[in-house]
Image 1: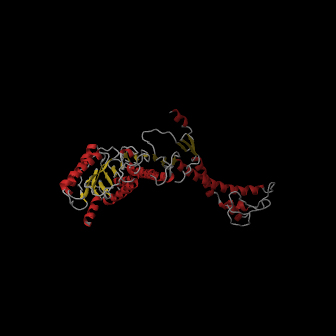
Image 2: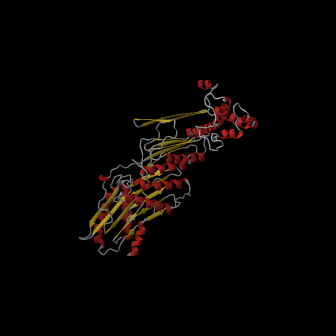
Image 3: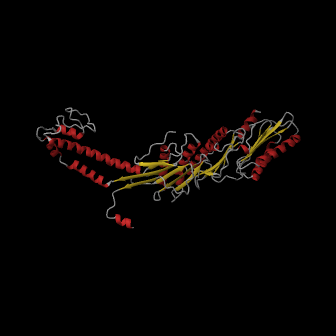
Length: 537
């Protein structure tokens, strides 16, 4: 009895790795498969009391199709938990197969199937049949038993196959004796037609009879349907009927691969809010060439100006006083001389250079003028150096632009958050297989947690640079727009602006022209002699 029970349990947890095709580790197909299987558990619970979810991720030839089904009487928590463990098990068991399926639980609590071809609405019959039995041989007359058992199977087949496109599930009972009851459960994936579901279930019954007729219980699992019966109750008393299904079924959704919102990246970017809309106007004018020329001129003066002449001028006798070369060097170094030799750095707002410096009406205007000129020269040098750095930073920000919409938010750990992260993680690997296209759009999940996304690369960059840019942009947008349900980002640099673009939202983006927000930036000088020519053209 113990061995029968163990064997039955092993048969119920049934995994089949197809040998029709393989993929390699770290390939785009491998990435898409893992992302798809990781998305099933969180999305199947959004289809309230339906227990069925199907999806795709990626584009051919790396497109992955997948579905998950939970038994019709289990809770959403048990359903999600079962799908999660089944997905993990199928990833670890079928390492490189492009198609695999698994029924998990006792009995047949959930089912996961993925493939490199469409699974939706197709009756899968090209797998080994896996009938099993539980318990001992029946002690009663088999003819009398079949007179009750056979009609029960037929009625359960009909009820399950007549279910809606949201659920095809039935559980029935029949009295075998005054003290003994037969319990039966049947279910199909709801994407099957009524006739295909009925055919699948009748095959289950036939396969069970051929294998295990005369036993006290058992079942059969196929890629699209399941049969289970026993002489003891094994399912929940309350079945979910169509009236209890709260959400309509949605067609296969292609994935085809909370802190407060952060402040704007650019301080001169203005967001205007009204009627739920955000309008951004950002204008950055960067004058690079004049500042660069001035910078070069100052550096040249500091290098080629004779040091000896400077020192001689510093130590030269000046009317009513003199300053030593040490004090002068402290001035240029930004150190105080007010404390008679202190090496303490001067504060930006209080650069004292000479303690006995006269106030207004000084008798040494030349000295004051010279010393402050020396300090001004150094401050100007530092200021321009910082200004050049600022120009560089601003120009980088100007071409590396993120906008987090603040109209709707999601919470960490939610189904939307999971879909959001999975979608952004799928963009880089799927945009690469599209030669000379550089555009990819996809969705993941079902309403109200469906996420839409797209990525675009500039038409002149390589596929490697495109994938790298989309990957870094996706990572940046995840870390910057922590909880916003919509965000976009143009990524690039000063030398190579606007290399790629990523946009995700909780509403469709495909084929829709969007004008807001707008981001403007300018680089270089004003046009001179060619300006009129350009305008005339």
